[in-house]
Amino acid sequence: MIRFIDDKDEKRKISREVLEALKEWFEVDESREQFIRESADQPFWAAFENDVPAGFLCLKETGKETMELAVMGVKKEFHRHGVGRRLFAASKDYAAMKGYSFIQVKTVESGMYPDYDITNEFYKSLGFKELEVFKEYWDEANPCQIYVMSLKSAVGVISVRHSYRGEFSSEPVPREDLMTIANAGISAPSGCNKQTTDLVVVDDPSTLEAVKAVIEPPVAQTAPALIVVLTRRINAYRDRCFAIQDYSAAIENMLLAIVELGYQSCWYEGHITDDDRICDKIASVLGVPDEYDVVCILPVGKAKDEFHAPSKKSFSERVKFNAFGDK
Ligand SMILES: Cc1cc2nc3c(=O)[nH]c(=O)nc-3n(C[C@H](O)[C@H](O)[C@H](O)COP(=O)(O)O)c2cc1C
Image 1: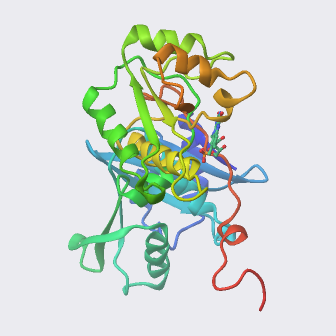
Image 2: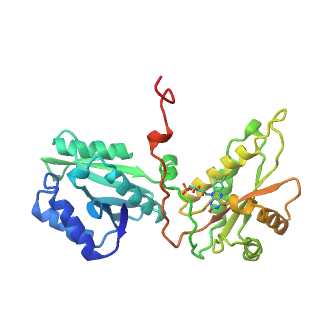
Image 3: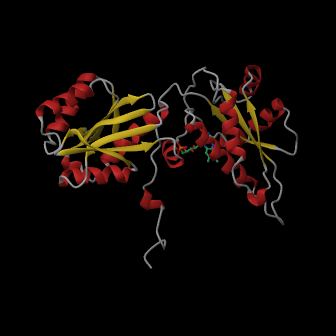
Protein backbone atom coordinates (compact mmCIF):
# COMPACT_ATOMS: atom_id res chain seq x y z
CA MET A 1 0.00 0.00 0.00
CA ILE A 2 1.30 3.45 -0.91
CA ARG A 3 0.48 6.34 1.44
CA PHE A 4 1.17 10.07 1.12
CA ILE A 5 2.74 11.10 4.44
CA ASP A 6 2.13 14.57 5.87
CA ASP A 7 3.51 14.27 9.37
CA LYS A 8 7.15 15.43 9.55
CA ASP A 9 8.15 13.12 12.41
CA GLU A 10 6.70 10.14 10.57
CA LYS A 11 8.63 11.12 7.45
CA ARG A 12 11.89 11.36 9.39
CA LYS A 13 11.23 8.03 11.11
CA ILE A 14 10.46 6.18 7.87
CA SER A 15 13.33 7.71 5.88
CA ARG A 16 15.79 6.88 8.69
CA GLU A 17 14.56 3.30 8.97
CA VAL A 18 14.84 2.72 5.21
CA LEU A 19 18.07 4.59 4.49
CA GLU A 20 19.91 3.02 7.43
CA ALA A 21 19.02 -0.38 5.95
CA LEU A 22 20.55 0.67 2.60
CA LYS A 23 24.11 1.55 3.51
CA GLU A 24 25.45 0.29 0.14
CA TRP A 25 23.78 3.32 -1.43
CA PHE A 26 23.66 5.74 1.49
CA GLU A 27 26.94 5.04 3.29
CA VAL A 28 28.09 8.61 4.03
CA ASP A 29 26.52 9.51 7.40
CA GLU A 30 26.47 13.21 6.69
CA SER A 31 24.60 13.00 3.38
CA ARG A 32 22.23 10.33 4.74
CA GLU A 33 21.35 12.62 7.65
CA GLN A 34 20.80 15.45 5.19
CA PHE A 35 18.39 13.31 3.12
CA ILE A 36 16.48 12.43 6.30
CA ARG A 37 16.31 16.06 7.45
CA GLU A 38 15.22 17.40 4.06
CA SER A 39 12.65 14.66 3.50
CA ALA A 40 10.50 16.13 6.30
CA ASP A 41 9.69 19.19 4.15
CA GLN A 42 9.15 17.37 0.87
CA PRO A 43 6.15 15.64 -0.72
CA PHE A 44 6.67 12.13 0.62
CA TRP A 45 5.21 8.70 -0.15
CA ALA A 46 5.79 5.53 1.82
CA ALA A 47 5.10 1.95 0.81
CA PHE A 48 3.91 -0.45 3.48
CA GLU A 49 3.88 -4.24 3.42
CA ASN A 50 1.93 -5.68 6.37
CA ASP A 51 2.12 -2.25 8.04
CA VAL A 52 5.93 -2.26 7.88
CA PRO A 53 7.60 0.53 5.85
CA ALA A 54 9.11 -1.14 2.79
CA GLY A 55 10.34 2.03 1.11
CA PHE A 56 9.76 5.70 0.53
CA LEU A 57 10.22 8.38 -2.09
CA CYS A 58 10.26 12.15 -1.92
CA LEU A 59 10.25 14.90 -4.48
CA LYS A 60 11.66 18.41 -4.51
CA GLU A 61 11.05 21.28 -6.88
CA THR A 62 14.20 22.21 -8.83
CA GLY A 63 12.58 24.72 -11.20
CA LYS A 64 9.15 26.10 -12.08
CA GLU A 65 8.60 23.23 -14.51
CA THR A 66 10.59 20.45 -12.85
CA MET A 67 10.40 18.14 -9.89
CA GLU A 68 13.37 16.05 -8.84
CA LEU A 69 13.07 12.58 -7.43
CA ALA A 70 15.08 13.74 -4.40
CA VAL A 71 15.53 10.37 -2.76
CA MET A 72 14.02 6.94 -3.05
CA GLY A 73 14.86 3.88 -1.02
CA VAL A 74 13.35 0.41 -0.93
CA LYS A 75 14.57 -2.11 1.65
CA LYS A 76 16.47 -4.95 -0.01
CA GLU A 77 14.02 -7.65 1.09
CA PHE A 78 11.31 -5.81 -0.87
CA HIS A 79 13.30 -5.36 -4.07
CA ARG A 80 11.58 -6.87 -7.13
CA HIS A 81 8.12 -6.58 -5.46
CA GLY A 82 7.12 -3.58 -7.59
CA VAL A 83 7.43 -1.23 -4.58
CA GLY A 84 9.68 1.31 -6.34
CA ARG A 85 7.41 1.35 -9.37
CA ARG A 86 4.31 1.99 -7.27
CA LEU A 87 6.03 4.75 -5.29
CA PHE A 88 7.20 6.38 -8.49
CA ALA A 89 3.76 6.13 -10.13
CA ALA A 90 2.18 7.93 -7.15
CA SER A 91 4.80 10.69 -7.21
CA LYS A 92 4.53 11.10 -10.99
CA ASP A 93 0.74 11.51 -10.75
CA TYR A 94 1.27 14.16 -8.10
CA ALA A 95 3.86 16.09 -10.16
CA ALA A 96 1.64 15.98 -13.25
CA MET A 97 -1.41 17.09 -11.31
CA LYS A 98 0.53 20.05 -9.91
CA GLY A 99 1.30 21.04 -13.53
CA TYR A 100 5.03 20.17 -13.68
CA SER A 101 6.44 19.25 -17.11
CA PHE A 102 9.50 17.21 -16.12
CA ILE A 103 10.85 14.89 -13.47
CA GLN A 104 14.59 14.52 -13.13
CA VAL A 105 16.70 12.16 -11.09
CA LYS A 106 20.44 12.01 -10.42
CA THR A 107 22.48 8.89 -9.80
CA VAL A 108 26.02 7.58 -10.22
CA GLU A 109 26.75 6.82 -13.88
CA SER A 110 26.47 3.21 -15.06
CA GLY A 111 29.68 1.23 -15.23
CA MET A 112 31.11 2.46 -11.92
CA TYR A 113 29.55 0.18 -9.28
CA PRO A 114 27.25 -2.87 -9.66
CA ASP A 115 24.70 -1.53 -7.12
CA TYR A 116 24.36 1.71 -9.07
CA ASP A 117 24.14 -0.20 -12.35
CA ILE A 118 20.94 -1.75 -10.97
CA THR A 119 19.67 1.73 -10.06
CA ASN A 120 20.38 3.01 -13.58
CA GLU A 121 18.54 0.08 -15.14
CA PHE A 122 15.61 0.67 -12.81
CA TYR A 123 15.29 4.34 -13.77
CA LYS A 124 15.51 3.49 -17.46
CA SER A 125 12.83 0.84 -17.04
CA LEU A 126 10.55 3.53 -15.53
CA GLY A 127 10.99 5.55 -18.73
CA PHE A 128 13.70 8.02 -17.69
CA LYS A 129 15.99 9.19 -20.51
CA GLU A 130 19.68 10.08 -20.19
CA LEU A 131 20.10 13.87 -20.20
CA GLU A 132 23.78 14.46 -19.34
CA VAL A 133 26.64 13.20 -17.18
CA PHE A 134 28.41 15.74 -15.00
CA LYS A 135 31.76 14.10 -14.22
CA GLU A 136 32.64 16.35 -11.28
CA TYR A 137 29.23 17.27 -9.90
CA TRP A 138 29.89 15.08 -6.83
CA ASP A 139 33.48 13.85 -7.34
CA GLU A 140 35.52 11.96 -9.93
CA ALA A 141 34.73 8.57 -8.41
CA ASN A 142 31.00 9.29 -8.64
CA PRO A 143 30.12 10.85 -12.00
CA CYS A 144 26.61 12.23 -11.85
CA GLN A 145 24.16 10.88 -14.42
CA ILE A 146 21.09 13.05 -14.83
CA TYR A 147 17.97 11.40 -16.14
CA VAL A 148 14.86 13.25 -17.21
CA MET A 149 11.29 12.32 -18.03
CA SER A 150 8.74 14.51 -19.75
CA LEU A 151 5.31 14.47 -18.16
CA LYS A 152 3.90 16.21 -21.22
CA SER A 153 4.84 13.71 -23.93
CA ALA A 154 1.92 11.65 -25.25
CA VAL A 155 3.14 8.57 -23.40
CA GLY A 156 3.81 10.60 -20.23
CA VAL A 157 0.35 12.17 -20.29
CA ILE A 158 -1.32 8.81 -20.93
CA SER A 159 0.38 7.41 -17.84
CA VAL A 160 -0.84 10.21 -15.55
CA ARG A 161 -4.41 10.58 -16.84
CA HIS A 162 -7.02 9.37 -14.38
CA SER A 163 -10.70 10.09 -13.98
CA TYR A 164 -11.12 13.05 -11.65
CA ARG A 165 -14.44 13.35 -9.84
CA GLY A 166 -13.51 15.83 -7.10
CA GLU A 167 -14.15 19.57 -6.77
CA PHE A 168 -12.71 22.06 -9.24
CA SER A 169 -11.23 25.45 -8.44
CA SER A 170 -13.32 28.37 -9.67
CA GLU A 171 -10.42 29.64 -11.85
CA PRO A 172 -11.85 30.04 -15.38
CA VAL A 173 -10.35 28.04 -18.24
CA PRO A 174 -9.03 30.44 -20.90
CA ARG A 175 -10.72 30.20 -24.31
CA GLU A 176 -7.41 29.34 -26.01
CA ASP A 177 -7.07 26.26 -23.79
CA LEU A 178 -10.64 25.19 -24.52
CA MET A 179 -9.95 25.63 -28.22
CA THR A 180 -6.77 23.53 -27.95
CA ILE A 181 -8.73 20.79 -26.20
CA ALA A 182 -11.63 20.89 -28.67
CA ASN A 183 -9.19 20.87 -31.55
CA ALA A 184 -7.55 17.74 -30.13
CA GLY A 185 -11.03 16.18 -30.14
CA ILE A 186 -11.92 16.97 -33.72
CA SER A 187 -8.41 15.90 -34.87
CA ALA A 188 -9.11 12.29 -33.87
CA PRO A 189 -9.43 9.61 -36.54
CA SER A 190 -12.95 8.72 -37.70
CA GLY A 191 -14.26 5.80 -39.76
CA CYS A 192 -14.05 6.72 -43.47
CA ASN A 193 -13.27 10.26 -42.24
CA LYS A 194 -17.02 10.84 -41.72
CA GLN A 195 -16.24 13.14 -38.73
CA THR A 196 -19.43 12.20 -36.94
CA THR A 197 -18.43 13.92 -33.67
CA ASP A 198 -19.32 17.55 -32.86
CA LEU A 199 -18.75 19.49 -29.67
CA VAL A 200 -20.47 22.23 -27.72
CA VAL A 201 -18.02 23.94 -25.40
CA VAL A 202 -19.79 25.60 -22.49
CA ASP A 203 -17.94 28.33 -20.59
CA ASP A 204 -20.58 31.03 -20.28
CA PRO A 205 -21.58 31.07 -16.56
CA SER A 206 -25.35 31.23 -17.10
CA THR A 207 -25.33 28.43 -19.72
CA LEU A 208 -23.11 26.38 -17.43
CA GLU A 209 -25.62 26.80 -14.62
CA ALA A 210 -28.49 25.78 -16.91
CA VAL A 211 -26.66 22.61 -18.01
CA LYS A 212 -25.59 21.70 -14.48
CA ALA A 213 -29.16 22.17 -13.26
CA VAL A 214 -30.38 19.23 -15.37
CA ILE A 215 -27.59 16.88 -14.21
CA GLU A 216 -29.42 15.02 -11.47
CA PRO A 217 -27.91 13.23 -9.53
CA PRO A 218 -25.31 15.98 -9.75
CA VAL A 219 -21.78 15.51 -11.09
CA ALA A 220 -19.21 18.08 -12.27
CA GLN A 221 -21.09 20.87 -10.50
CA THR A 222 -18.01 22.97 -9.75
CA ALA A 223 -16.40 22.68 -13.20
CA PRO A 224 -15.68 26.11 -14.75
CA ALA A 225 -16.19 24.64 -18.26
CA LEU A 226 -17.86 21.63 -19.82
CA ILE A 227 -17.38 20.02 -23.20
CA VAL A 228 -20.55 18.37 -24.44
CA VAL A 229 -19.90 15.64 -27.00
CA LEU A 230 -22.42 15.10 -29.80
CA THR A 231 -22.60 12.30 -32.34
CA ARG A 232 -24.44 11.79 -35.61
CA ARG A 233 -25.16 8.11 -36.11
CA ILE A 234 -24.58 8.02 -39.84
CA ASN A 235 -23.09 5.08 -41.71
CA ALA A 236 -19.46 5.19 -42.79
CA TYR A 237 -20.13 2.69 -45.60
CA ARG A 238 -22.90 0.15 -46.39
CA ASP A 239 -24.50 -0.52 -42.97
CA ARG A 240 -21.34 0.12 -40.96
CA CYS A 241 -21.73 2.94 -38.45
CA PHE A 242 -18.54 3.91 -36.58
CA ALA A 243 -20.01 6.81 -34.65
CA ILE A 244 -19.21 5.23 -31.25
CA GLN A 245 -15.59 4.59 -32.24
CA ASP A 246 -15.35 8.12 -33.65
CA TYR A 247 -16.54 9.90 -30.53
CA SER A 248 -14.53 7.60 -28.26
CA ALA A 249 -11.34 8.54 -30.09
CA ALA A 250 -12.29 12.22 -29.87
CA ILE A 251 -13.00 11.96 -26.14
CA GLU A 252 -9.69 10.24 -25.39
CA ASN A 253 -7.79 12.87 -27.38
CA MET A 254 -9.52 15.60 -25.37
CA LEU A 255 -8.86 13.88 -22.03
CA LEU A 256 -5.16 13.77 -22.88
CA ALA A 257 -5.09 17.41 -24.02
CA ILE A 258 -6.90 18.40 -20.81
CA VAL A 259 -4.25 16.71 -18.65
CA GLU A 260 -1.38 18.09 -20.71
CA LEU A 261 -2.69 21.61 -20.14
CA GLY A 262 -2.81 21.03 -16.37
CA TYR A 263 -6.56 20.42 -15.98
CA GLN A 264 -8.52 17.33 -14.96
CA SER A 265 -11.67 15.66 -16.26
CA CYS A 266 -13.76 12.52 -16.33
CA TRP A 267 -15.57 10.74 -19.17
CA TYR A 268 -19.22 11.05 -18.01
CA GLU A 269 -21.19 8.94 -20.44
CA GLY A 270 -22.93 6.24 -18.38
CA HIS A 271 -24.30 8.86 -16.02
CA ILE A 272 -25.92 11.03 -18.65
CA THR A 273 -27.13 8.38 -21.13
CA ASP A 274 -28.89 6.20 -18.55
CA ASP A 275 -32.69 5.64 -18.46
CA ASP A 276 -33.31 9.13 -17.04
CA ARG A 277 -31.76 10.57 -20.24
CA ILE A 278 -29.93 13.58 -18.78
CA CYS A 279 -28.33 13.78 -22.24
CA ASP A 280 -31.65 14.77 -23.83
CA LYS A 281 -32.19 17.49 -21.22
CA ILE A 282 -28.71 18.86 -21.93
CA ALA A 283 -29.47 18.76 -25.68
CA SER A 284 -32.61 20.77 -25.07
CA VAL A 285 -30.79 23.41 -22.96
CA LEU A 286 -28.16 23.81 -25.70
CA GLY A 287 -30.56 23.74 -28.67
CA VAL A 288 -28.95 20.64 -30.21
CA PRO A 289 -30.76 19.54 -33.44
CA ASP A 290 -32.58 16.17 -33.48
CA GLU A 291 -30.09 14.43 -35.78
CA TYR A 292 -27.41 14.69 -33.08
CA ASP A 293 -27.24 12.73 -29.81
CA VAL A 294 -25.51 14.08 -26.71
CA VAL A 295 -23.35 11.18 -25.55
CA CYS A 296 -20.87 12.51 -23.03
CA ILE A 297 -19.83 15.49 -20.95
CA LEU A 298 -16.26 16.32 -20.01
CA PRO A 299 -15.77 18.80 -17.18
CA VAL A 300 -12.62 20.92 -17.52
CA GLY A 301 -10.93 22.70 -14.66
CA LYS A 302 -8.11 22.74 -12.16
CA ALA A 303 -8.46 20.06 -9.52
CA LYS A 304 -8.94 21.12 -5.91
CA ASP A 305 -8.82 17.63 -4.39
CA GLU A 306 -6.32 14.81 -4.73
CA PHE A 307 -7.34 11.94 -6.96
CA HIS A 308 -6.73 8.29 -6.49
CA ALA A 309 -5.54 6.24 -9.43
CA PRO A 310 -7.74 3.15 -9.70
CA SER A 311 -5.98 -0.18 -9.52
CA LYS A 312 -5.57 -1.82 -12.90
CA LYS A 313 -4.80 -5.41 -13.83
CA SER A 314 -1.14 -6.16 -14.43
CA PHE A 315 0.44 -5.75 -17.86
CA SER A 316 0.90 -9.51 -18.31
CA GLU A 317 -2.74 -10.25 -17.49
CA ARG A 318 -3.85 -8.12 -20.42
CA VAL A 319 -1.05 -8.14 -22.96
CA LYS A 320 0.41 -11.17 -24.70
CA PHE A 321 3.08 -11.34 -27.35
CA ASN A 322 2.63 -13.47 -30.45
CA ALA A 323 -0.04 -15.85 -29.08
CA PHE A 324 -2.73 -15.73 -26.41
CA GLY A 325 -1.65 -18.91 -24.65
CA ASP A 326 0.95 -21.66 -25.01
CA LYS A 327 1.17 -22.72 -28.63
C1 LIG B 1 -17.76 4.67 -22.08
C2 LIG B 1 -17.41 5.19 -20.72
C3 LIG B 1 -18.39 5.71 -19.89
C4 LIG B 1 -18.07 6.25 -18.64
N1 LIG B 1 -19.04 6.81 -17.87
C5 LIG B 1 -18.76 7.27 -16.64
C6 LIG B 1 -19.78 7.86 -15.83
O1 LIG B 1 -20.92 7.97 -16.23
N2 LIG B 1 -19.46 8.31 -14.59
C7 LIG B 1 -18.16 8.22 -14.12
O2 LIG B 1 -17.93 8.62 -12.99
N3 LIG B 1 -17.16 7.70 -14.88
C8 LIG B 1 -17.43 7.22 -16.12
N4 LIG B 1 -16.41 6.71 -16.91
C9 LIG B 1 -15.03 6.67 -16.40
C10 LIG B 1 -14.63 5.27 -15.95
O3 LIG B 1 -15.31 4.92 -14.76
C11 LIG B 1 -13.10 5.25 -15.72
O4 LIG B 1 -12.47 5.52 -16.95
C12 LIG B 1 -12.63 3.91 -15.18
O5 LIG B 1 -13.11 3.70 -13.87
C13 LIG B 1 -11.09 3.81 -15.15
O6 LIG B 1 -10.54 4.87 -14.39
P1 LIG B 1 -9.48 5.87 -15.03
O7 LIG B 1 -10.21 6.69 -16.07
O8 LIG B 1 -9.03 6.71 -13.86
O9 LIG B 1 -8.38 5.06 -15.64
C14 LIG B 1 -16.71 6.22 -18.18
C15 LIG B 1 -15.71 5.71 -19.03
C16 LIG B 1 -16.04 5.23 -20.29
C17 LIG B 1 -14.92 4.74 -21.20
